[in-house]
Length: 472
Ligand SMILES: [Zn+2]
Image 1: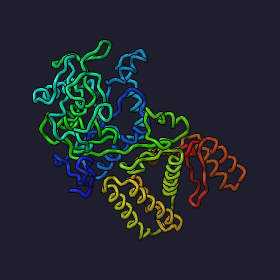
Image 2: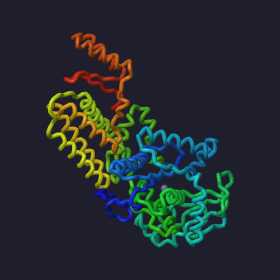
Image 3: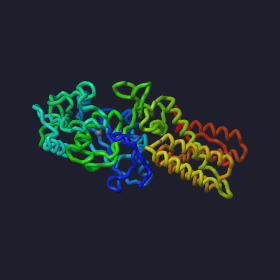
Image 4: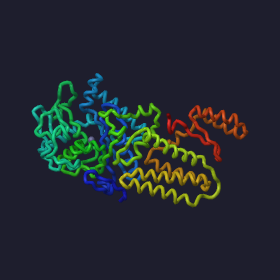
């Protein structure tokens, strides 16, 4: 059906993507734990899933994309206690913040954003099934654990030897007594002062891992196509998801696992515990453009570590400026006469190169190289005046079409100037026609002060917003 191939972390194989149900690619992404603002390391992983979803849709696939919201866990409970508010209020606040940041970074909104606390029933159902099948057991305090010894293939995703796993090293230590140190909590018995739910398996709250199994199975079925997350989720989170899901349903859980490498900053992984985190609104407040930030987070292949720095951000802003300049040049290009006979081949070549690159396990670097080959090519054709006005519009259509995947170009509707600025621009055009250079220069300065740079070309004035590429 397609040439699109993705590298599956579990098997280590690169496989063609063929939707399991023959029509819709079903994707689950581990989403944020809403106990504080997400940092851009988190957003790298979310934006990689966004790139995947955008590309699949652009390629003509039907996609159903689910991203969970973890709105109950130890950190949320602690945070709410410290802030003197309910866990629900704290989670709502940071969920709203996450959605704002995601929109700022132009992340496609997932089709469903299920919250753990709103899926207690399917979570309880799944835990009950695991107990019925002998894969889970209850401890004295009423908590319920998954019995890793009952699941021989445990450790396959992370390539672990289950016998070698020891508590305190690679297995998260749990506060609850359990049969085997490797076992993990499915259900945590209620503790005084903590939120809990009264259910058929007792009073308590779900562990973290089980929510992703329960909500993915509920939203996408027992077997689905793609599961994404950061590499730090491979173990134990995704390992646990596989064990719980497959033990309960008896079916293969996920066809293809995609894991995004870390974002590094100042030489180490960006993490709250390391303290080297950067948040979206802090960066925007310091003058970074959201489009440049998106570009910087997208432009490196998802399985490659990304070094984030002022330099990488500046490189992203410079790349965007080249795209913006070309878009403006094409928009204002006017040339009567015959078309450029070489143009269609160039546009087709760029599109083919872009597609072949992304088909190859989302090779974004090669896809961007195809885009910038086209940028150079079109700049040459503009310089040579070889295109007709119609050609320029077709070239622009191609750029905008490729950008449906990238999501970095300025939205064309936002490009209209407000009437006051347009009046200044018109007055300047009149001044130039009257060869009144002093007035023309004065109007240029006035426009610059208001964030609009004007350039004079053979096609007349061309303007761009100064603030859009590198503010500060
Ligand atoms: Zn998850």
